[in-house]
Length: 307
Figure 1 (cartoon, rainbow, N blue to C red):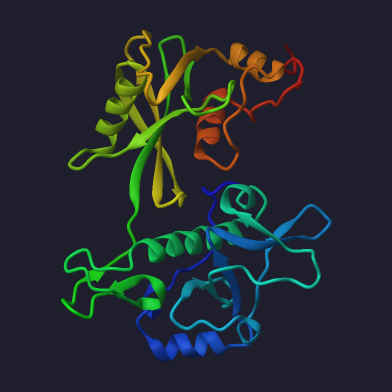
Figure 2: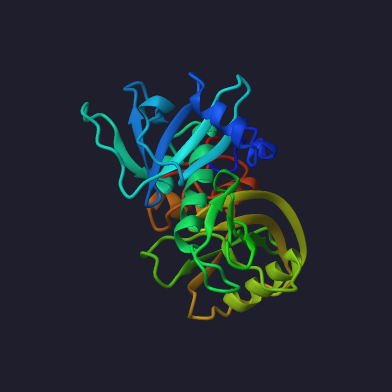
């Protein structure tokens, strides 16, 4: 599972300011609630290869009124809430375990991954935006966790999402450009990425970031897909891009090494363990697989069928 999958949750934003509706939704017997703390939630393995969020009826949930976030409604009418707490609740059965989204996002269903990404994003924003950026007064939570309002100057503050472009660049030989950041372990390569600057289009950001990080000039750019990336508050916008020249000059600050790979070269590097595939939770793996033509092989995968 990746965070690009759709979980079928209707966020039902039109209910966020309706306190009577929210109170009725909270007290409904089918409503399900989970706790988020420090970017983590409790997850539970069922012993048959499935992992799910630990949810509970609202009447079993720890009490917190201010930090109760409405996340949406599924196709069966079940309402979902997240509670932000200073710590996760203990579990007497010792089956549940705390997990962050980087781990859990690979294991959870599309529905649970979507709910957790929503909750983690809200929690981070709530923890880091407690004061009004206009006058400095402490703000109060509104709109079921999706708004902070300043009681002093009346300013309204909404969750911030920072757009970032992530792109797989190919050249005229249809080789893929992968890079390794300076703080990554040896052998870990992935697509290039970077934040969009003020007044900049997404396509211009792709061209600029590739030039800055790898010294490669990009011409044509095609949008592929997007992915929520609440680490802590980004939206990844995936692109395929075509280089106009193959010369590489890494910046040395963000990217320590960049290389062109043919499909056969990348398969060999994956098979020998020389190169580690991008994380499965990231849209980077989808971009590489789109070019590669099949799921990426792991270490010791052996020769390509028919090769």
